[in-house]
Image (cartoon, rainbow, N blue to C red; front, side):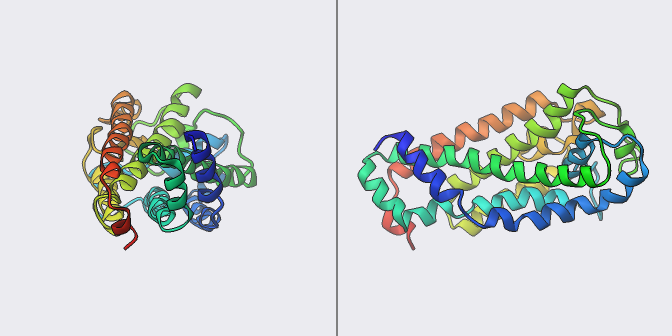
Amino acid sequence: MNLLKLFSHDLRCGLRRKRYLLMTPIFALACVPFFGIAMETPGITWMDWVFHLFAGAVPPVVDHLPLGFLAIMGGALLVNLDYLLNDLTASGQQVLIRCGSRREWFLSKCLWNLVSCGVYFAGVLLVATVFCLVTGGEAALTNTPAALNWKFPFTPVRPLSAGQCLLIGIILPYLTMAALSAVQMTLCLFCKPVLAFLGCSGALLVSLYFNAGWIPGSGAILIRTSLFGGAVEPGTAILVDLALLLGSVVAGTIRFRKQNILSAEE
């Protein structure tokens, strides 16, 4: 069994799970605070809705944690938390035996993680699209400064090009989500899943309290980017996310080669 067939198995078994749909109400609740602003502000665009969901917060974060942002990012970790270990205790163990290659089996899980985060992220964007249509917003890839000024009155929010909006509103949040999820999946080979989840969730909280691009999670906080006068350079955030992805693949592959599969079932 080659990598392509392993990947096909993971797509079939790992994506047909109801938990993706169960996260939809969370996405909708995260959109609710922006509803009134969208109705009152002329020229609101689809990208403004995306910016609202991934704006995050400016430091110091004391009593105004961005709960919608945390729910969306943390939800991705929760959705992807247990698939690798659950698959080991189900048909995945037979697939692993037939495959004969632990490296390819784990690499397939890494590819699945990227797709799973993509499906989850697409769900977030779909809900944002629904809210945009309901409020009469424009299907534009540019932002409206007034849309974030109500939330960050002391931050210089300026109009960005479509490319800049896609970079900080789509590419960076997805890469950050995928990187944290990959780290979590690899950590599950070293410790209990709940500890892996708490560790990656803790990284998200740390990224909110400290304004630095090298902290995992910072890439998804668009209001912290240098495009809005923040300390997070998009290029640095991308490098951090790619390093986390690559490091997770390497560390996970090495660990899984020596993993006692029977202990993983406990």
